[in-house]
Image 1 (tube, rainbow, N blue to C red):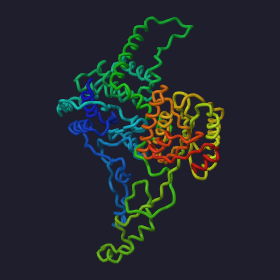
Image 2 (image 1 turned 135 degrees about the horizontal axis):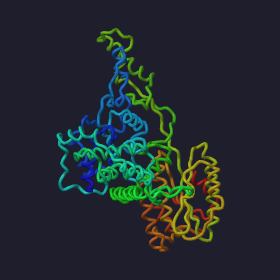
Image 3 (image 1 turned 120 degrees about the horizontal axis):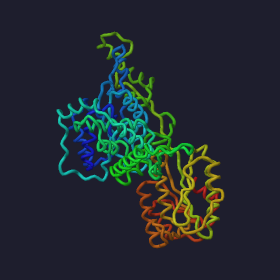
Image 4 (image 1 turned 135 degrees about the vertical axis):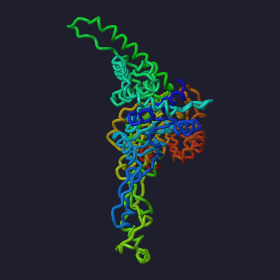
Length: 550
């Protein structure tokens, strides 16, 4: 099915039963194609108003509650309603950057059965995406990445046809054999969520109601599985074909059930083929990467980089309104309101002792401090590999000895063979570091470009977590393995220079330690392209390296 026809079908299903479906997860970058999709969304006649949310919305605007400024001004409790006070279809742009507090609030609202959510996921890199808390509650998924603009926009559903579908929807039934096939499909795809089965079942019934049929057909179930189950599949589950349980050895076979079991197998195979065809080839891998990255971070969401990843000393407060995350600085608020009391009391009709306006509110602020991540890129190739690797091990352990007081993290990328390897992800654990470094072999080629690319990826991931990355390249500069893994000195040097320019463009601080017996001009040029500090250390030891990087 064409992606635009699939989007039109998803919006029609959502219009029939928005609360039952939970909502739509629409994955698309902020391009003209996404604008066309939002136009179709605005033209769909839902049974509730559409309300646009911001990823930075505060709890007072979302949930409602006591308005501090209005309460102080009126001298009595003043309640302010929030966006979730009335049933609505919520539209959340940049859903991938929504903070955990907002996604948890939205999940609670969806569970209460009064709202539906359309999450616009604009993730542009692997490891980013909609958090699992709301995505598990959205029954429909669609991706428009790589989709071209349609020549003709799909026509929105008419109000009469939609009204007939809504009236027929509660009466539509799903045959038992299709229900069993749906459960069998979820088992083969490795989908543990029962919520996904329920929403897919509702989607199939809604499609039948839109077609004017009182019973779900196989085609209806296939279309529902494309929208509701395909994106939840686990690659490892697909690689292991599901087997129907064999009868116990002490019981005779039951040939009467074989035709029914074969029918279930064939129908499940048909559903799996349709689910696989509904998504781009790489979308499952990207979604799995998003989930794995969020799980490794121990957070439910990701988005724009923070200025820091921990709170530092207090700094002067700022004007603002309570948002559920910031606290009111009472002293600063009273200090701001005090000079105006005489003027305000002249026009006050309630004879209050203290009059505080919203503009007087001050919020506490703290300096955000970023942990430092020092990424060692160590050349472990050639005849002197063991000596350089031993020096790097000693430097890493010396740096970690100071990590507890300075909150430094260290990581280690090793250049050897045909491809670099991240053997030590960012850590502050000295025990883990020694265990990873113990007995690490060296030798082989020098994949310098691969090592710089691995270090750049590690640095960008650390930056997205609010930390400050820096690189330390420890090599003699004799790159001989290209980025594609083939031995080619010329291409290897060109690839390394390209990655060095990317590191400079990313604004990542770096230092290049030349440990060759004589300074290498090629390595000095690479250091210039990377905008790093070039330090020749022909007789480097662990303490000299640690002192240079301190």
